[in-house]
Length: 92
Image (cartoon, rainbow, N blue to C red; front, side):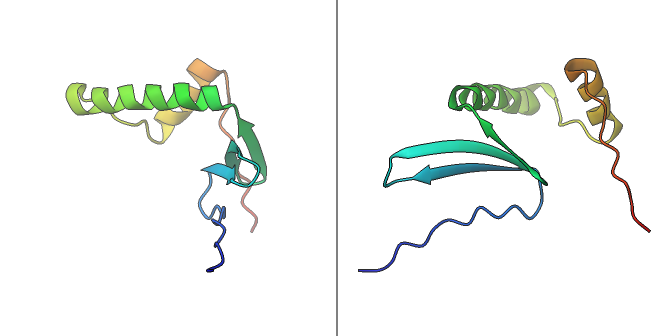
């Protein structure tokens, strides 16, 4: 019988979303990976986010909405999440 190959959860371009399943134990978990942080996401929150994303797809197609870029991302984070953008230190 062929050996089952495990799925790779390597994240080459963070952030990444992983859906990890252990079939033998019949358990799963959704994780958000962003560089050195790996955060578990509750299933119901992931489902709610997927429903919001599906609604956004319709707005983008029918009403001209688009994904924020550059400074717009920082503005949305500040205004709606109360978060400051992360400034990466560049080593020279």
